[in-house]
Image 1: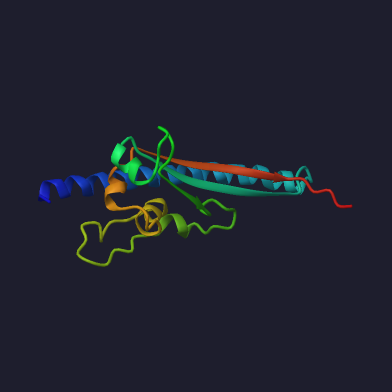
Image 2: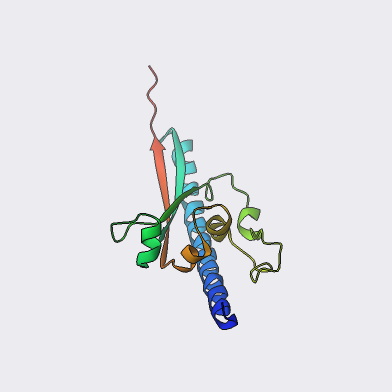
Length: 152
């Protein structure tokens, strides 16, 4: 692989990481706002319990990538991971530490990696670098379950 091609790939991954980091911050702000509201609901017994569910979904328009992951329907994600990133008890350090595990001469070894990027690179053995480079869109879904309990 030529150095210009490698540099372009590294820059694409850096750009994706930067965008994911911004989205993590945006979702974290929303989750904190929702948590404040939920605390009031719990305190006032409007709800009995609640849970956050967070999902990272990755999409590509690249037909080879989608074929590798058996995606036959346009618009379906080729990778999905459930994250505990926005639970009420997650420490702030989770968002501000680098999750980069590269310790070699890798071109990204010194880069700060947000947790979502870490998930794509280090926690998803089914994803190759080729798959990461084929990413066109990432969704971070944040959902809340409200629990209402009736004891008999």
